[in-house]
Length: 100
Image 1 (tube, one colour):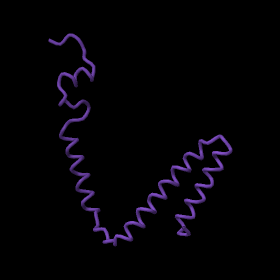
Image 2: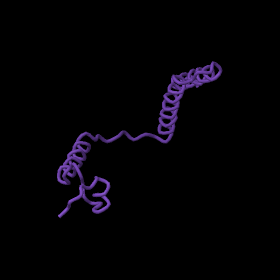
Image 3: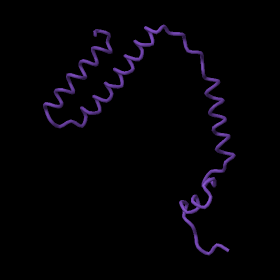
């Protein structure tokens, strides 16, 4: 009956619920297994005081900022910009070491 072959996008337009490539049963089983594995590995996190949580957030923020500065430093060409980024990196290193 179908003489013309359809592309995947055309098939999805016709039936958006149709999954191409992976059967629904396999997908749901995989998700279920992942959830079970995560629940098995999950251990209760220690209760932290508000001050400890704030310190942890600051440390994580500084670590993320450091990663961003390193990435920018890899691509920076202008000597003045590199100098700014190196100063920022030194500042973040001091912060992470607990000196600031």
